[in-house]
Image (cartoon, rainbow over all chains, first blue to last red; front, side, top):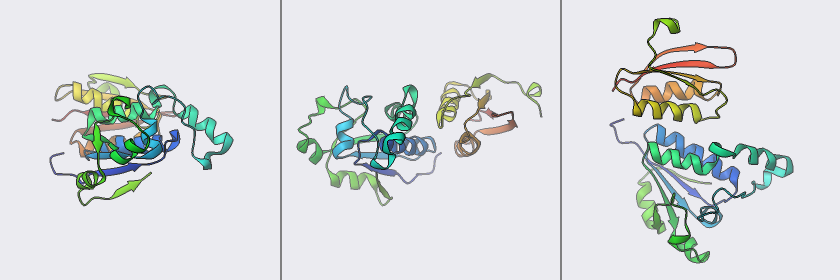
Length: 139
Length: 81
């Protein structure tokens, strides 16, 4: 794994557990395969990363419906929770989780309010710089 | 090749673990192990069938064997570096 790899850059907007779970899987796979990962937390995703609130139930995306919500809940139990996947991804690879400065202001969140999984607060230009010329995925 | 012909350093029974759990467990074992250590990962996760060979090749370790079982597969991986 010596050759430089193109980073995976994920913008997380949605704060539902299924979308966060899907994002965590992508981050984990990229980290395992030696790609740097940059995660930018905006809006509801940032809200889900509040300290002490991470493992709370955040609901499912609208397409899940009532029956799908139960499936999402089961899929996020214990070690399968998205926060645990992000923790593992950080453990095995170069994974940085950034809080969007604007969303921090909008939600009146300070760095003390954030889960330790979040590395720092960044502006959008810094995130673009981290992403280099690689693709950016909005989830 | 059968299991008895390969000296296994450690067997990881990851059956029942969801994707990417078995791979993550293997990565942890490889990291903690010494060069030459051989791990057997038993997985019922369908993703492992593609993920463990892909990771092993990428991370430049050796996929010694894949042994199909009833509802699971056993992946023999040697730490090569």
